[in-house]
Length: 368
Image (cartoon, rainbow, N blue to C red):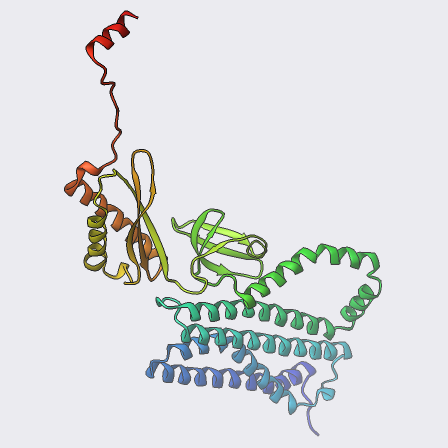
């Protein structure tokens, strides 16, 4: 005669098998992850270390669920005599867990792909036009991809429960005017999302572009689906809706190239030796400017003449706007110092003409 254990004890021994497989799956995952991480560090591949950190969570969760499935495969669930509603709830929770794993894994894969593109395209280099194009598109499409994955996952989650599915069907069937109102309310939001996608595709602006927005000079620091962050030169941040860049004109100084021309204006007397000042400007660019001048343009021209002064424009070129700003400041300072030291007489003067009439005429004027 065999002695049958108590139902709670029998349930414990039955669940011990899947729990053991879950623990074995987690241990195997941890060991494999550690081996792969050590191999990546030994080869100096920082990218793979980052990738392993991104997939650590979803793969660990998947290993535990896989162990649970293997353990449950050797159990006769009907022999446990569990209530039907408990078994049904367990199946639904199991489905939700796998949905979470797949969504998490897909998002992690998108993050790995984005990291690979960022690693392959250095945005910090001087000639970074191609890198800025690619990284801008990658970041924008990653955000769109994440939203799509989350929406699909939420839909799959709602489809698991019959009650939620019925409520959703009832809401869709009886939407009517409420649906139209909701559509009108979401119209601006949807147009903003599409505007963000349009910027990602057509790219009127890109990451690290030098732009002038609302009279402020700065660099594009972040582009999202709804707004753009511009880092202004004095470290302020200007947050602008994406619709602004499609509806209003902006200045983009790095649209096709980072190369730029800069002007320095000087007002001097008509006696100024223009040829000598032009030679001094060329010497400044060759000998003192260093990397600030890219060797393309260096010239001095008389651009205007007024009643008392003439206007000289020094035109210089640089590989980027930041360097050009420093170059213009250098040229302005050196030319002013040169004029003060070599030709102080050509500084702007105010001339006054006196009447040269004789003493008799002056006396008549005084008598008058």
